[in-house]
Every structure is written in C-alpha cells, then in structure tokens.
Image (cartoon, rainbow, N blue to C red):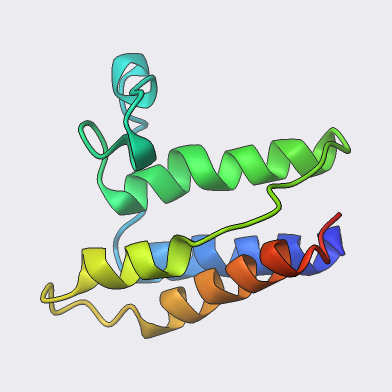
Length: 108
C-alpha cells in the first residue's frame, strides 16, 4: 500500500504549498538535529512536515524498510493551526489519512 501513502504525501506537500507553509530554504543542520519531539524547539510544525516527516517516509518506502506502525500527526496539525486563521482542513484530512493508513498497518 505504499502507493496509497505516497499519493497522500504528495497531497500533503501540495497543501503546504497552497497554504504558503512550504519553505524554499531548508533549516540549518542544527535545527534539523533537534532531539525534541517534532523539533518543537527549532522548527515550526509545517517545517517539520516538510523537512523531517515527508522525507523520512519517502526514504523508508524507497529503501523497502518498514513504515511506522502508528501515527498521530493530524492532532498536532489541528493544534498548530488553531487560531491562526489558516484554513488547514484539507491538510488535516490528508494527515488523518496517513495516520489511518499507518495505524491500520496497510502500509507494510
């Protein structure tokens, strides 16, 4: 089911771009090396999606390695975008799809 997950990851990238939340310049190596969950001390949530989450899942699929057995990214997005005025509903839906696919084990 990697094809299904890959399609949703492409949607996530497109939605981040549409929302103006896609960075053209990557964060520093130090920012990417944070040991905090979701790099909360060095990255915004959209940056974490762009520079950590998406590349990690793509790399795991390309290398034929197991994907995470569980995911709970959508609630993080909902919390991040709450009160920002950004309509993140479509992004949250796509993240919920990834959460469901990974949690159901259909990606392995």
